[in-house]
Length: 168
Image: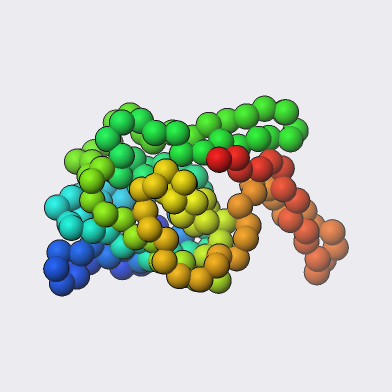
């Protein structure tokens, strides 16, 4: 495996934390991913700044976004909402009230993006940018923020149909 999306984590010179995250793994499907996230974030608790490198991140699941973001805020914070067309309903995502380890609400945060940054990775960037919690550095992202699913049209063609939309 690829360590649940945690491609590389290390401390750089001048006590800068660096995390290359290539996907946001579903923490319910892969509970072991929570332990990896907790371990990595615990290493970063005394860093002067944290750099999240999402330049190769194609997306994933909002619950990992929720977990990682919870380390960056002291109080519960509203990250975003989703509107679901089928049920005509809204759901909200907030930072978690309890996490393992320390929070670091005052540590500077930078997020690196590229034209390959997509979907859940875009949500992570956007949430932190709107909450004025991170500086986003890099290229314009690919543009795929809505939840949905692929439907097979024929043996060689599938279409992605959004089932809702992100609201911030």
